[in-house]
Length: 406
Image (cartoon, rainbow, N blue to C red; front, side, top):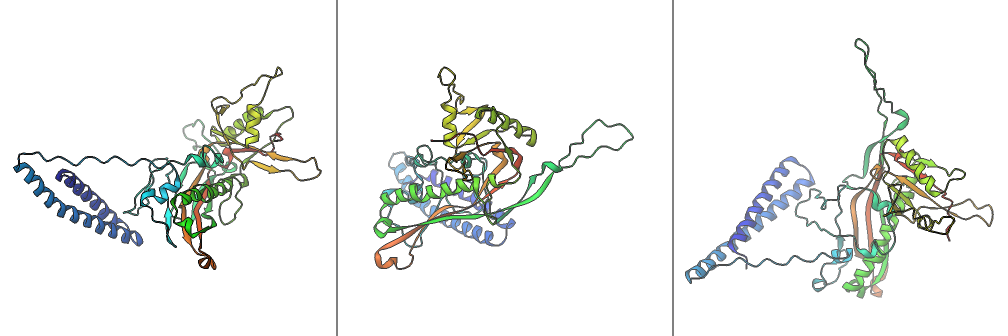
């Protein structure tokens, strides 16, 4: 049982929530007002329940005092251990799981651009969930290097309007000024752009027994469903070519196209691309993303005596964080049977683009066709995202590093 002090503190906390929600209510309109009104009523209901409980607790504590004892505060409950996987965050503890019903939708929250605890999108009453990306979909499996390196943001819009830097229109005229003459004017090179939110989704048929089984659902959600979405999102961030959705960085006409000069090896190319980004964008690049075959070739470089050179030190090459990405692979135009795949590298400042989420990746269960007659169901995983590229010249791409692969 809670102590009277704990109940008093909870009531005071609810007072603060009600005051904040009331102030927000006065400053908003539309659906947001309805959500705030519901939250205020919910807080007041919790307060009433606590006030009713407080009377009983005070009476019990008074009885203990009269008997010569000292009322003790209720012990602090041990904080629940952080869940290890996304599925466990969605499904909750195994002991309390009773299966999914058709139409149930399970949703995860996302981090904001500063990577602090999850953003409150102005819908009071929601519980924000804090979780770490599960190891089986990050450390020990597929690489989402480029996408994972970008800052993240949330949006309520279907179309994001923004400005991107136009280097051709930028003019810095700052100079010494002589009294009596007109001061020089600089021109800012910005152009208005827009990016649309794109829905990324897929379905998977399952047996009805699987929908009720916590263990099987955890495996399906973590591995097949959410990993499948993440793979598609990682590909879209680089190669997306949807005119009404995500246009990947490599499909942006404004990025720097690098070529490998005669006599240069991969290490030379990366250093020159680093210089190109600095000169053309004004930003020092922070990362170099490359196909795993390219990263492998770097780590296996040897000198003339067969000794490893160790070009990558502590995960960095030329002070750039090396990140592997499966999507940095292309295909040469087939002219002969000797043509091979190409493998690329991308040097970039990771804050030059932002990955936005409107609706975070979620899971929903339903029926398709005549599945009901066969005790089957369908699980759908989907999310809504967008990519904003603010500084195209902060990306330098070398499509063919000369690495042949294996």
